[in-house]
Length: 367
Image (cartoon, rainbow, N blue to C red; front, side, top):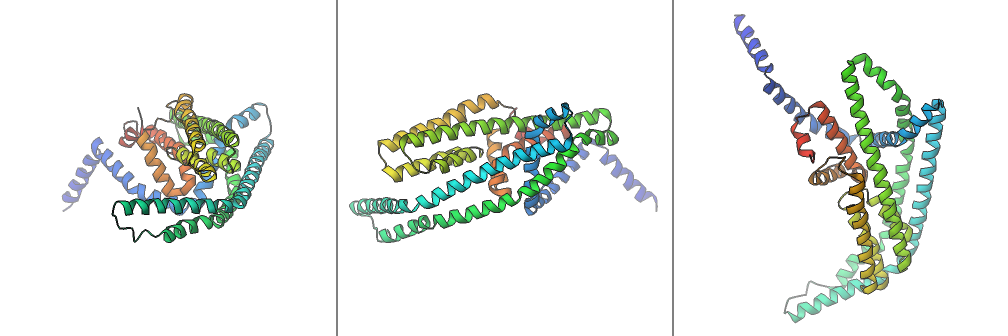
């Protein structure tokens, strides 16, 4: 009676010892774990988003903190300097956003009449063409179209006010970000000692090399992206000033922020000032010239200069960048769109360290 369970146990052990079986079981467990992880990330995004931002900030401040540590500066002083820089940065951001939103809310009403005229002219044109081509246009009511579109336009100031209140709520998360950042900075020096206690020397060095690789890639990506986005925003604001277009500060902020969103961010950022120019002066040669110049600016900085400076260090295929944009945008909204590329690149590095021959990393990587 005892032989049957013993034989089953031996067969099970022999099948598990097979490398192919082990690899299959590993992939199966990963497939089971992924939906669970996604649900947790989405449900607890109020915690994970500040944590990820704090990790990124620690990477950005790493050269400064390392420099101060080499000068034997106390850790409390390093934390104080870091917090002062962050506080100044957020103070500048809040001031710019407040000034831009005030300018936008006060200046929008005068564009409502211009927008209504464009809608009326467009609908009348299509009604005339439909009549000339003997196409029924009884459902193409001018009043309905105008009311439908202008109602959303007239409620835009209210929507912007709501958005600004949401932004204010986001800044309340600054406290949580700062708390995470303080603990990350305090624990950085202790990480090597803790890994030494639980890992061999080679495993510890491999883990530290992985973290350093992730840190270097994110540092370079965010630094280059910030410089390119700032240059794009400054040139775009200069063009708006030269053409006498309103809402320069608003569009400058949007040009800077939206350029962090891959693929579609620069398109949206360029379209907004073009639409403002069209509403301001009509679809004339001036608008066409401005549209060409600001589009050329985006092409120059985004498609020529940035790839040359950034290189292929992120090692992600274009389709993977688009998929990560959709996924992280669905998971964490606009914040996910902004950080989707460095997050996906970090996951790719971790997967390669865990298993250099894994299928997921082969699909993600561009090499």
